[in-house]
Amino acid sequence: MHSSSNRRRGERGQVGIGTLVVFIAMVLVAAIAAGVLINTSGYLQNSAEATGQGASDSTTNRVQVVSATGSHFENNAVGVVNITVKKSPGAGNVDLGQATVQWVGPSGSYYQLAENGASGNPDGRFGVAVVQDDDSPASSPVLDSTEDRFTIALDLGNPDLPGATEFGKNLAEGETATVRITTTSGATTVKRIVVPETLSGGSAVAV
Image 1 (cartoon, helix red, strand yellow):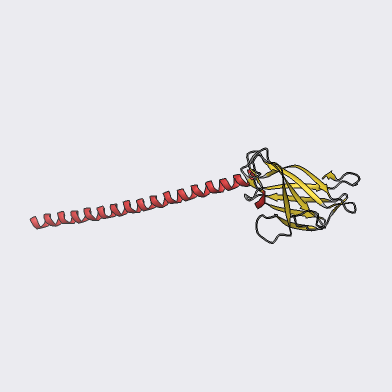
Image 2 (image 1 turned 120 degrees about the horizontal axis):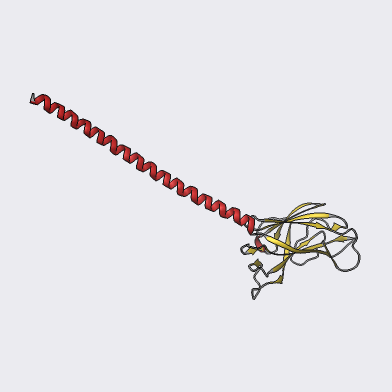
């Protein structure tokens, strides 16, 4: 009688220990799963924040065109295009020395880097001149104030500008071109250049 009772108590004890082991295993699995979920959630949040910041920069950190003129006339064609820019409202500092310019015109598409700027093998190099800069001495060449103005000079055809490298061909009367200015954040500003039907008188013309 006592032997049977002891056996049943032993069996119940074994069942209890087995249940406890299973319970502990389930707790451990749940803890590991929770840790994985927390880590994954943190990673996704950081990725989303980085993506959001990148998207914001590529939208806001752009330049805004103030004016565009053509000069250095030769054979009824424009030899130099000057584009004056400022930073767009809400933009951070924009370093034009690290910006890129793409020119698409009748003679082809040309990739430009700034003179003394980023390294590479561009089709030409554009000049950068200070129009107005709050810094003293002028920064080289960073738009870090809403009052700053810099001019991007594109030398077409024959060499006309010291420092800049010529590319393509002069833009003749009535011809058009598209200029894309891209900052290091990936924000792009597009400017359409239109040469008047007649170039007569004066040394420069609005394009």
